[in-house]
Length: 587
Image 1: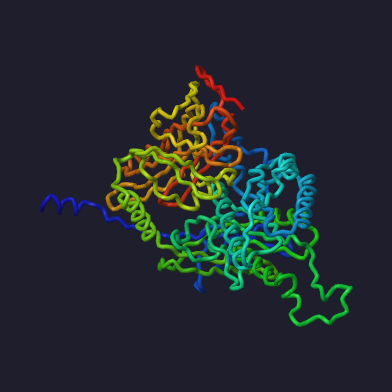
Image 2 (image 1 turned 180 degrees about the vertical axis):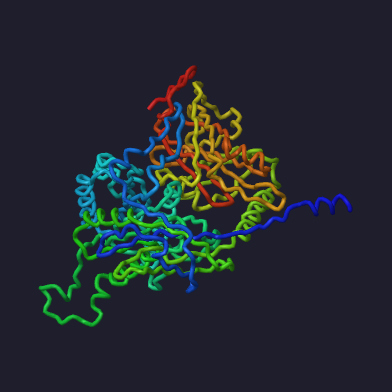
């Protein structure tokens, strides 16, 4: 017997089984009250009509003052260290309040804000709440906190004042397209923020209208989700919420509405279907809100004047739920939508749960990621660099804020940045937490001022207006959490990825003063991967910041292959002098 035959005979048989587990959050109510104490045998689950076996069931209850007190505080950071990490406040449910100013009339905006303030004044301690406000951009008013006083102060502050800075001037259809794109972008940024938080997220969306074209096209996919098709996803908003565990609760900010023909002042007979067509198709808008809510496991509210009471009802409704899982019997991963139906053996109960998911082939998805990575590393602009060798270029960021105008003569032009990352890197954008990272920032005590005869420093991309003005050199040292990165394992047994680290200096008018991009290719074995999981991946940048004026640093980490992002922002004057340094920044 040969050595090879002997090894083959002695090698134990290996059975490889791959299962795809589907996770569902289910709210069960009877007469508006949560039904508790259910068992897995109470749920009947079918997928495209085929029965499924519930593998596990976990019941969740709303947080109380006692459970809220057990929340672990965010660990303290070293001086001049900044992070986009938010402490996980609980493992149950989070409430997200979104005030939609762009699609809500001014008087209705004021009514919603007053209702929110009244509610927060009397809100008992409970689960964490975050407040977002969307005008022409999505803004984080207050990150997750369970402190009623902090939430109340945020709701009453100027941070909650909408600023409609830019509106489209053009045809009605052009304006609708702009509003639709703005809705989608806003939800994308919101989704990247929520990605860091486990458990169910109950999104209370106060809106006056849902922008919609004459063709009644659905909103495109705003949330980055493991079960969606990453490239060219044609599906609607609701398709993106499959594993993000975001349940949408739209609330019509217009409160109680009556069709004009039904008002007391009108003597005309009501026309057929009048309720459907009044107020620019409000009936159709309600239908769309219902579809979004039902598909994501939420519920729509309209024609009600008790806006504050609706927040309390949704908080309680969305925090009392069950999480069930099942291993699907359908092994054909063709990327198509699979419809889920849940029934119960109990009469008169109502169920809220997401209605389906997209069966994405993970193997094909990983191959597509490897293809994109190979194209990025060996594209038309040059060949791949050495393993782990960073390449620094000017960061091209699109949008209202213009990028720095004067890169060095010999600088390699960076590849165009994806729109999602561009938008995430704009000043004031909602912080993204898909990738968690820390950044230690320090500044040199030396003030540098160049003359027109001086050679332009390498990797210094100060905009033309600041080129010959005094500046300090700031050092940014990134450390990205390896556990939040996604490296694809290739046929060669190595894990591959491409990371981009970006620092942008903005002035107080949101103009791009300076920026730098560092890209690093990763091709690592399992031992190196274990090291990365333990210590993360680091990058170091030096960037010039003008010595006079008020400036902001926006930092970002981008997994360019998997479209995962982390960002944070802080004022430059938050960087304090360290031992042995002196920063003389004039205002």
